[in-house]
Structure formats: structure tokens, C-alpha cells
Length: 168
Image (tube, rainbow, N blue to C red):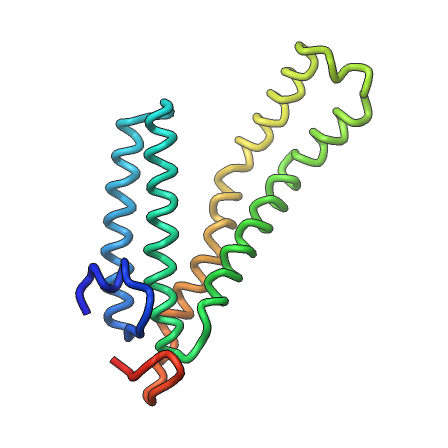
């Protein structure tokens, strides 16, 4: 199976070696994306480029992890479960890093919600608290994908034919 098929063709199975090669190629592609985004910046075209990269990355990871999970006799639902857990975990961490206090402060002062200066001050306070916690948050957000990657990379293949096809 070619690297193109590994990253852009969903059906089938791949073994540990093919998964590792595909993951390394994806990591290099992701690093190139980061460089491109640094050059493009946060402009409107940069937004659309980043949105394109996001969709492309999700599809490539779906193909890569889906085939590897199929090789172990497992459904791709584990990949989608990891994405759902990651989203819930990210929201939880943001709320714990100042989000709850931000909303509580605003809801406790309904008469000041139309005061643009006060609202901007509250927003700055929230952003400063979130920014100060960002290194720890980023580390925690790597946990679900890291666990799935370790599981996919270390678990042995199903040596017999399963409902996803014959072994590679």
C-alpha cells in the first residue's frame, strides 16, 4: 500500500510498520503546515487555509487510524470517541482555567453587561488567566490523542482475517 493510499483511502487494514510510516509522514506534513501558517498569519486567507488544513488533517487521521484499528479488529468508533473526548476535555479545561469565573462575573452583574469598557476589562482578565494556564492546558490536551496513538502503535495486529479484510 502506498503512502497516498495509507493517508487518503479509508478502507482496508495496515500493520504497525505501515502505521508508523504513515504517522511520521503525517507529522512532517503537519510541521510544514505550521510553517505555512506562520507565514500566512491570522488574515482572512489564513483562516481559510487553516480550515482547509483542519479538514485535511482530520480526514488523513481518520484514514490512518481507521485502517490501523481495523487491523486490530476494532471499529473506527474508537477514533471518533477520542475526538469527542478531546472536545469535551478542551471545554472542561477552558472552563476550569477562568471560564467559570468569567461567566459567573458577567451573570452576577446584569446591569453592567451593556457597559462596553467593563465587559472589555472582564474579557482581558479572562484571557490573561487562560494564557497563564496555556502551557499546562496544551500538555493535557495531548493526552487523548497520545493514548490512542500508543494503543494503535503498540497493539499487535489481528493475524487472522476479520470483518475488515485479510491481514497485510
